[in-house]
Amino acid sequence: MDNRANIPTSPARRAALYGALTALALIAGYLEVLVPLPVTVPGVKLGLGNAVVLFALVRLGARPAVFLMLAKVLCSTILFANPQMLAFSLAGGALSWAVMALAWRSGLFSVVATSILGGIAHNAGQLLMVALLLSPQVALVNTPVLAIAGALCGAVIGILVRALLAAVPEGGPRA
Image (cartoon, rainbow, N blue to C red; front, side):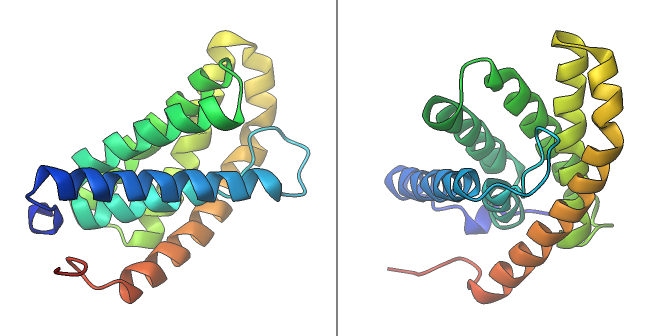
């Protein structure tokens, strides 16, 4: 799918759009930190910041979405986490982006299905990093809960993004 028509041609407009989307992703991530889900397994989050990445993937394409994901991961680690969390966030974000980009590009998956795949992939990426850096046993024990949480949270985010895509006109305002 060619999304280049939705990307502003002016470098200043592009920088403003990417900055606004990054800020939106960070705000969404911060709100998520304020209202944690009632689960005891570490790493279970709704993924509100990932909604912005999925929106960018659908409207702008894979390349802007990966830059947004990287900015979101780096900035949210600096603002809300400790440096050790960078590896987990980056692994989850990168795998999630790659799976969603492939799924969306294939044209076989809806926004909701793409988001569910992304949620599962995000948790899988984090579990792979847990297995590599901490303990394969801890990763294995948490896999079922995080797989279910990834699917459920991915569905919620997908429904949210589907509604957002319907509400926001394609191409945005022309000023």
